[in-house]
Image (cartoon, rainbow over all chains, first blue to last red; front, top):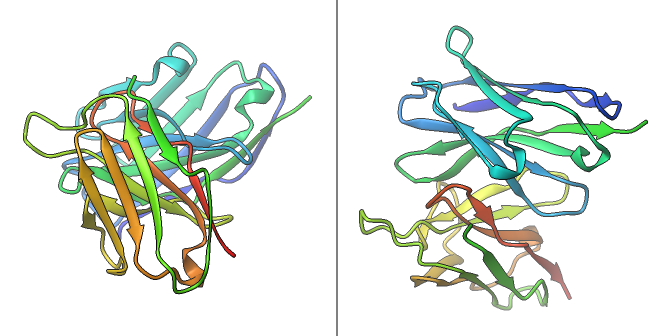
Length: 119
Length: 112
């Protein structure tokens, strides 16, 4: 069974950095991408970017260019996202998501990591 | 960026009755491979979204057949033939055609 299990909730101060992990299991992840999507409280979904686990190549949404980094650890099949220079606007639930190249859709979602940025 | 616009934003429905949600994209979602890259997601309160339909009308694994999708190019529709209590929540269309991937604003389905 394919699973994406994310790290736990975080509380951060403005200006700090955030790192969230997404442990994948149940699949070899050939032909898949890992995306990051966030959702502010009571708001809709916002795409942040994707990474190809096979090449490590990322694609970042313009809104996050320069302060957002995605990485992939092949040895542990874990994806990471790092967001710098946090503000209160970054308070959100962060999801890692698998995109399958058969469905060409977001078929498996992590449980989410709640991040609160407050002074 | 491709803008996805959903209507209505809220849809009160009676159990057992049909429901319909529209999604329009600012540009065609047809890929050079001939497929149209339009998905529908459903999010229940307190849960992550889950995939309902991909490439307009294909039901994902385990999705009941009361859910159907239609449309082409830039205009798409999600239909629920007979709404059940478990269908409440927010429905999103999204385009995985080109970066940046974008979502509709969401349509809240609630029981009247």
